[in-house]
Structures are given as structure tokens and as C-alpha cells.
Image 1 (cartoon, helix red, strand yellow):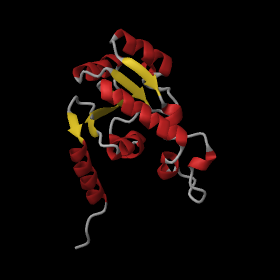
Image 2: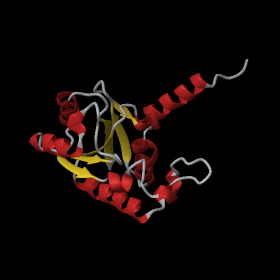
Image 3: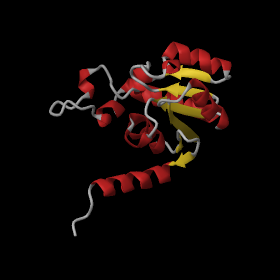
Image 4: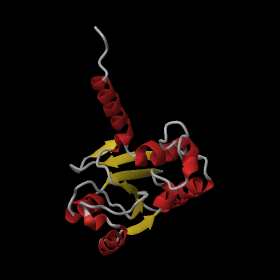
Length: 170
């Protein structure tokens, strides 16, 4: 099984749809907690559903179950106030959302979408794709320039970014 991820980023509608069509995506799963965009208005939930329908891509919204900014206060660390992905992964509605994606992946070419172009620190990679990896799904990332980045290459890039931010002492 395999799945793709993408961020709508600041793409135009045409660029975004071309990336999906070029990768032969059949189902797009929106995992944004707030499915709107100030800059890419085509990516607002209602608009996106219509745009994708014209491209013959099925749209599924699961941001209420798989979003990175849940409304439930018990999804946040009491001390830091930050979202706790481990807490979220333990919730029944989250697990249902993951099962729903797994069902789709068995039958269709699926892509999960959030806003950020770079998946390195996006919840679609750190939370949702992490759960899918644990279920044995291979993850591929559709980047803004059209290349398909393997999960392995993304992790190499992440290690490189971390290493450049925190150089080893001489």
C-alpha cells in the first residue's frame, strides 16, 4: 500500500490540480483542521470539492478527525500548551479517520493534503503519515516543483536541516 501527501501552499488552482493529475491521484483527503485558505482561495473546502470534481478526483474531508489543531483541550500538553500527537493518536475518532484512509488506500490512489508545501514539520507527515507508516503504508510526498520525494529522502533532508541548525562543536 502507498499514499501521497501534498500541501496546497501558494499554488494556483491550475498548478495544484496539475500536480494531482500528474501523479494520477483519484482521492484527495483534506486533513486541515480549518479547511480554508486566505491566499489560495481555491483550497477553501467548498471550492476545492468543486475544483476536484471537475478533475474527476474525489474529495474527502477528515480534518475534524485528523487535523493538527484539534478543538478538544485534552489534545494539548497541560504544561506547554502544544498539541500532543500521542494523545491525538490515542483518540477513537482519530483512529477511525486513519482506518477510513486505509480503506481508501486499498482501492484508490490517495493523497492527503494540508497547507504547507514542505511536509517536514507539517502534521500531515508528523502525525497522519506517521500512523500510516506504522500500518505498513509507503509514503510519498508531492513537492511544489512536481518531484515525488520518498519518505526516506524526506528524512535525510530533515536530518540535514537539523544538522545545519545545530552544527557539531569543533
